[in-house]
Length: 266
Image (tube, rainbow, N blue to C red; front, side, top):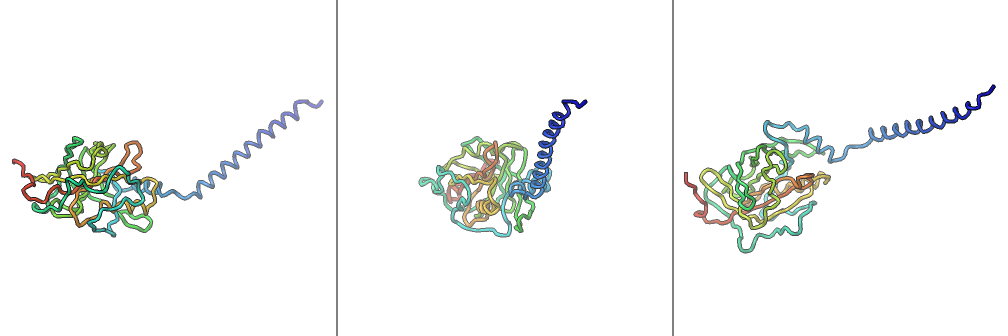
């Protein structure tokens, strides 16, 4: 006797096997596509940063191309980035910074920004060289423990040039957590030994970094390159939730009068 349930069972089995076969083919195609897919520039960057040899007590911080330094007394432009239109690139008219002089070649040791209540020690930081897309550039190291890092190849205080200071804003002590709140015209004091060097903030710029091209990232580094004029440049990431941008603060000497360099009591 023929079992009346035989054909429906075979039919059900066939129907079941068809979608399973389709799934296998689909997964195979996806796997092949995954193998053939080139990593994005952002993935390459992240892998590079992760694999950089981290020095004890420091974490890597992307910076500039050592082979193409620039020196200019004009303000760098925020090429390829998102310069907030509320941030003017013109210095305050009533506090025009001027070239300073006197106490030569001082290493920065302490940073104070009264408007945000910042008072932090500064330590020299080094860089490691990295190569990507046939371009050699630096990965600067940013200090942990709530300290500010001075790019050791950038300018000393009081001799002209660009003194570059970096710091984390959402990790490792959050030293620059409130740097985003700094405004043009705010005072910055950099201390070296018994001397205070006074500066006025002239520029505040946000530059888009994450998911930008390698070329755009390299263009952004013009802000931390050598300059002919005397300035202090502060750099950190922003915002805390994503680190998609670089926040740049530029400050210039408040006065060129040597007596205005405050000598502290020992």
